[in-house]
Length: 351
Ligand code: 13P
Ligand code: SF4
Image 1 (cartoon, rainbow, N blue to C red):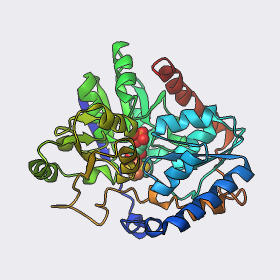
Image 2 (cartoon, protein in one colour; image 1 turned 45 degrees about the vertical axis):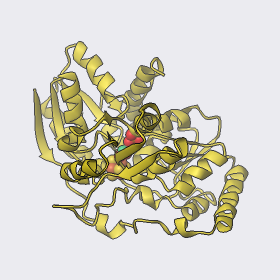
Image 3 (cartoon, rainbow, N blue to C red; image 1 turned 90 degrees about the horizontal axis):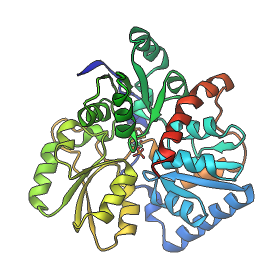
């Protein structure tokens, strides 16, 4: 049985920060691009810092992570890499919850971000006090929160999960006879409940990027590319998930492009991941799942506006001081650490 509770507020400020679909960096000459990358690489070296980037950041950010001995991955892998690296300074190119997770796991490290203003609509749509009120009404339920939450929400959880491990963790809890209070992503929660049959009470948050993918548009696109496989991140609406050949986290979708025999892929996730998909399979074709059509908004660009704030110049700026350091208050950190560690221990056997 599943139940829903409330609609998480959509941040009104999003229109103000939406960036042009194709960042200016993409128009740089090859020479200028190499020079910028080399300058940023040297700054990372001088600072003794390692760069951990999410797949949704600009291609240049991902390229810099690769060429400087850093890492590009999904949110679970970023957490693991940040915790295991010997570097004392880690630059997290992603959104705030990713920087916070790194700090919670490694308080002794300096965690810098190109911008501390990179939010996430799931995090914003789940205020800690409102979540505490719901939790208080359901003390019998095991509290499982998505990684895309603030430290203050994680601190209230029994478990933290990412999309790559959510089904396994919930199956494990269901086998122990536990009922679940889930937050904040309603689409991922519903998908996991359907996959596992678990009793999950869902918070109704949503990702502003994935919520914009349209089933009708994908069906029309399938008619144009009948041989294409459809890849969908589980933050997408139910009707879009129903059309998927593969549902998974960003890394799982990237792997699908290498494992599946298809030559064409319709991809329903942030287009930042196309950089790695194309790099892994240069001969294959990747097509953005449509976000236009009825109900489309200016947000309908398949690119997270907060991920897009991670510009190379902002990264270089962050390396010049400590102003962009992530801070998590110690008592909060210790509370948020427990469910995060539980997740990492659970996944350690599955690698
Ligand atoms: P992944 O865990 O798949 O990297 O997803 C993070 C995210 O924010 C997706 O929108
Ligand atoms: Fe959050 Fe969606 Fe951006 Fe991912 S793509 S960081 S879920 S707003």
